[in-house]
Image (cartoon, rainbow, N blue to C red; front, side):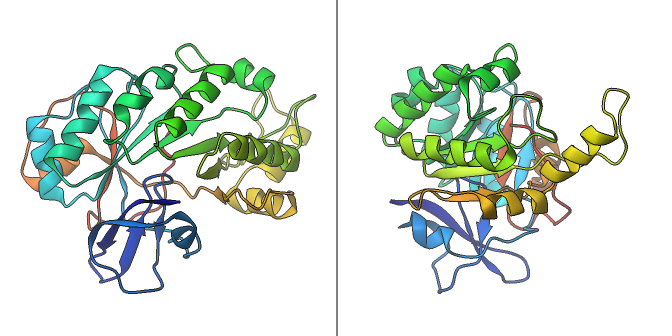
Length: 300
């Protein structure tokens, strides 16, 4: 699959390729021209990911990205924008934001969502969005729907939305959190990875990203020592990587373990760029050179 990526460089001169489908930064094995670039999906996936990249995410809580916000983004040197977050609905405002970002500036544009109605807006986003990340709460319908909160898409809504986006020509990455503990009747860690990978293949997704659960250092009043021990087996990046090594994954599916992203408030970004913006949006920006820090999980 040939799709858009962003080629950028860090302040220390390191060349990076940003993937809008995963928010991952890769170190290329060849010289590349800076800016937007069409490259092979498998080629970029084969390059090493940067474990602690420069700050890639900026969050805020407005509805539309217009005027001052776009000016601030342009001044910041942002390479990619991810429209995401609990306030970001899949409606006409999202389509307007995506169009503004694509037509006014050469940003890569992605959408991260666990909301319903992706099926309704998928065709409108095609041509303006480079990738959609869809959160799958669990690999089975029963478990997903049990975990889904009000406003989140049901399992069947999620699958219909993914199919609509793929049919419209928009690359889709499935994102599934790994639970800190597995309850009675749930799939084991390895089996849930295999089930989610098979579903990604069936849906023709670009791949599957697993989000490790943070490890708990002390038992809570509702979790005993055994639950904590079980959480230690399933939480944390290294643990998920070990589960992935044991899983039987179809060769056509790329499965990766997410490493988290570094969050920067949009207000801070605009202050840094000398601009000002509205107080309500929910976006994530790939911003080379805004500084580096430890990974900070961003809720999808």
